[in-house]
Length: 270
Image (cartoon, rainbow, N blue to C red; front, side, top):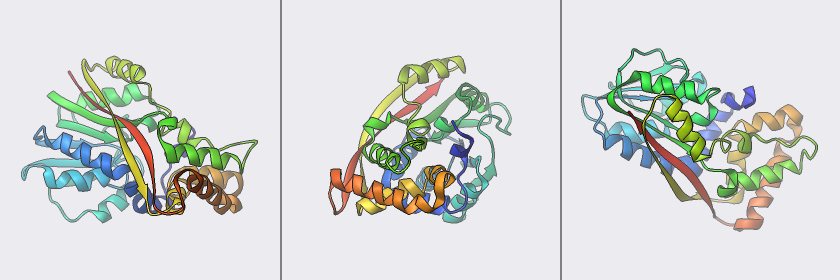
């Protein structure tokens, strides 16, 4: 993973929340929130919370006496998430590295992390930290994207942007968001972190956007793919977005578009 893969700053948080969240994250956030709430936890830690889509879905479903700590490595994303959330005395916002959590052992009933584990420099360490702060019987709930070929728009965009930079194609989407999809590897990493009870549910959904342009803009300008493009030639960001728009429209139509997305939802305990 490139260092830039972890940077969600500048214009990215707003594009991410307004375009990427409704495109691919909202439906899975509803699933994550329902799953976590089904355990009726008294204390929840969310890591890699991003722009707060899970937080907004989960908070209304938690108990009135619950404690909910929401964290992210990127302070700009955390600030944006907090700005979108109405006041809730149960929620504490804190910048934190999921690989070195600043919390005591056995502090939470559930640790949840939607689409963040792919960004962990050392996943076993991150999982071990989640297990350390869980109380006996607690659960680690997280999700990761399946391989890029199972996620239509991400695959379309990656191939299209490569035509703008044929000698050095930006590979952020394939390398990081869709680079940790092997369920055998995921199980092995969790086992090495000390988890013994692991369930993995692969869930397919449809991603919707008002237009091919909206979908292309979401990926090219609302993720660290933008940083990869601008590092090569900032003047070509619009051309890259245009190429991605054309690719999505050619496969999915000129009006509202829909494409397959697929992810693994994991619950680990023990």
